[in-house]
Length: 253
Image 1 (cartoon, helix red, strand yellow):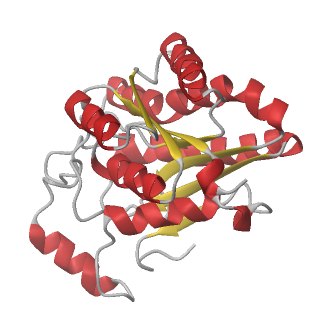
Image 2 (cartoon, rainbow, N blue to C red; image 1 turned 45 degrees about the horizontal axis):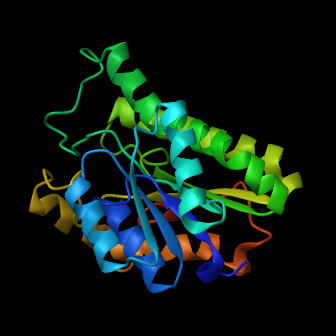
């Protein structure tokens, strides 16, 4: 299915990386369900700017009932079920190495919050999408990860552990759902210049990262969003269970 024929849910799609993904999809002609929780003004602006393509909906994606209702409302709005899901929503998080929870003070609540934000939310959207994806024998699920799993240069224990669990879930669901024509993949980024999550990062850190990449630059949200198109496009129809790192070549494999 071509991108312009898809209805794509982007969780956390009204701010940061999610907003860049939303705009990239809109410019390709896709219809987008913009899920938000706190970014109401930005979501409504997208609806006004792209009235034929955007359906904005507030939902806490860690709550299955709210997710199910969002899928139903989107189907009613567009007259067709959601075909593709980008699991991008992130619990409020700041990439600030000085303020991160150290292993000596890390508590299970920190871990559980990140796991619910990454894994529980993805489980909820996946389950909500399955009936219609199976019926259409088509589905694309893209989970957003991090290159910190491969290279934990700054040990954000809670965030990285949750994304590692999400990578495992990506691969197991790919194995389980491939028989129904559903492809499940992960895109893992590094520190992006800049998003809400990376705004607390000092400029010198970005400069160090840029010098360490083959491309000599820090990946932007817009550049990362371009890679989403790859996994949504027909060109990746034989690709599933994969983790593509999109960080300018900083981390290999």
